[in-house]
Image 1 (cartoon, rainbow, N blue to C red):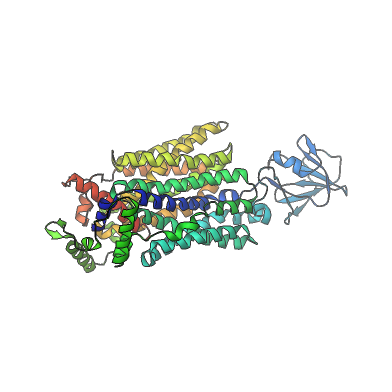
Image 2 (image 1 turned 90 degrees about the vertical axis):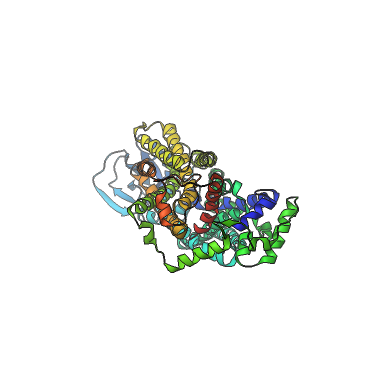
Length: 576
C-alpha cells in the first residue's frame, strides 16, 4: 500500500505515534473492566430462607446461635437440618428456598417427619461477611429467580456481538475518532448509570448498551492504532491492545477486593479511565482514512504535524501517494488494484466460497474452530477463575496477569518459528493443562489453579495470533469474508462461555475440562494448516490452496512486508 510510505518518512513508532497509542490503549482498559465486571456484580452469597416471626434460637448440627447471621458463614445446604425457634414457640426447619413448620418438641437436631411446608416469598437471609451487597441480594435473584442472575453475562455478550457489527461499519463511514469519542463518552455515562439501576430489567438494558459501546471502542481502537503505526512494529502494537484488556481484568479483581458494595464498585470501575475524555477530542483522524475519503489537505496537515512532533522534516507530499512510482509486475500499483477490483466485481462472492474445495473447506472449519475456542477459552478462564477455590480475587487477578507475558511470548514466537508452530502447541498445551485437572486431588486448590492459569496463558497466545493468521491463509478476494466470519465465530464463543461457566455448579472444574478437550482436538487439527510466515499474501483461490503444498518463491523481504500488511488489513476487516 502506497500510504505505508508515510512511516518510512516520519517513523514507524516515534513520539507522535507513541503518545496516541498509549492514550488510545488506556481507554481499552475500560473494555476489559466492563467485560468482566459482572463477576462480582452478580455474586450470590450463602443464603437461607428466613423463618417467619422473631427467631430466638438457631440449631445447626452441634452448633447453636441466637441469629441466622451467626450460622450462615458455616451453613452448607444439604448437609443437615437448620432448625430455628421463634418467639411464639414455633419451630421451623429452614432450607434455601423454603421453610417447614414442625411440631413443637424439645429443641434438638432430628429429622422431623410431621412438617408443614411454606414457600419463601422474598424473605431471604444472606451471609454478608464476604459480599456486602450485590444485585442478587438487592433483588433476591435466588431460587426460582436465579436464572435472571445467570442471564446477565450472556445478554452482555450479545451486546458485544451487535456492537462490533454496528460500530465497525459506522467507523468506516464517519471516521474512527468520532466513534472512539462517542463510545468512550457512552462507556462513562452508561457505566455510572448502571450503578443507579432501579430494578433488574433497567440494569440488564443498561449493561446491554454498555456492552455495545465497549465492543465498538475495542473494535475501532484496533484499527486506529494499526493505521498510525508502521509495519515494523504493527504486530506488537496490535497484540498489546489485548494486554490493556488484561489490565482491565486485574483492575476488576483489585476493586472487587476493596469494595464489596456493587453500586460503589460499579461507579469506581466506570470512572477510573474517565481522564481519557479530557483529551480524546484532540485525537487526529488516521492518514489511511483521510486518504481513502479524499481529504488530502487534512492528510497533508497531519503529515506535517507528525513529522514536526517527531523532530523530523516532512518532505513527503500527499501527491506522491496518489501517483506511486513503484511497480508491480510492470504496472503501477493503482492500475493493478483497479484490475483486481474489476475482477472481483465480475463475480459476486459469498461465504460459500470459503468452502470452494475440500482443502479450503477443511481449512475454514479449522480456522473457525480456533476463533471459537480462543474466545470460549478466554472467557471461561476469566469468568470461571472465581470458582476455582482459594481466594477468588487473587484468582481473577492472576487470570489477567498471565496474559501480559503470553502476548510477549506470542509475538516473539510467531515471527521466528511461525504462525502454525506457535498456535498449535499453544492449543495443545492448553488442552493438556486443563485435562490434567481431572487427576488433581480435590484438596489441592493451588495445583488446580496453576493448571488453569497455564491454560489461560496458552489460550491467550492462540487467541492473539489468529487475527493475523486468518488474514494470511486466505486470498484477497475472500479475505474479508474469512476474517468477518471468523469474528462471528469468536462472538458465538463469547456468548456460549457464560453458560459453560455455569456448569461449575455440577463440578467445579467441568468448564475448564470442556475447554481443554476442545482445545486439544483443535490443536491437533491446527497442525494440518499451512505455514504462512514469510509468505506473500495470496490474491487468488488457486494460490491460497497451494499454500502448504508447494513452495511459493518470492523475495523474503516482500514476503515479510506483505505478511505485516495483512495485519493492518485484518484489523479493518475484523469489524465485519
